[in-house]
Length: 72
Image 1 (cartoon, rainbow, N blue to C red):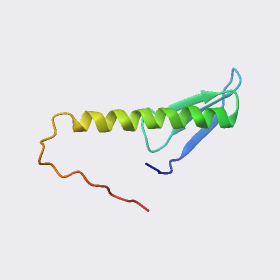
Image 2 (image 1 turned 45 degrees about the horizontal axis):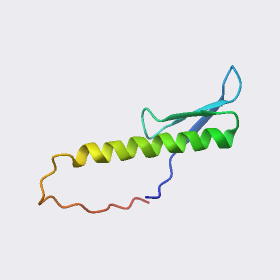
Image 3 (image 1 turned 180 degrees about the horizontal axis):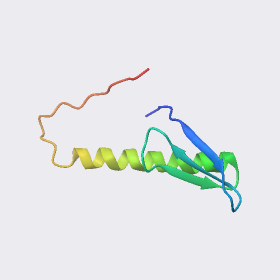
Image 4 (image 1 turned 90 degrees about the vertical axis):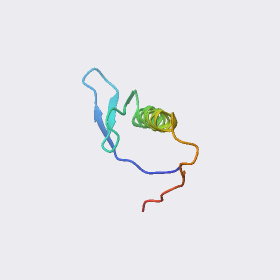
């Protein structure tokens, strides 16, 4: 899956950076560099989306239609 999300990155008072994703509540990352922080945030977003999908698919009827929706 390929998508774009908004990363809000700020310098951490103790050094390094922290980030949150505006579109995915609960997704956050941290790192020593901006790039490391973005990678940490990317991993958090992937884990949250994978978990939400797995949770939704549990108990889904076999005859349910599963398809893709493209945005943008």
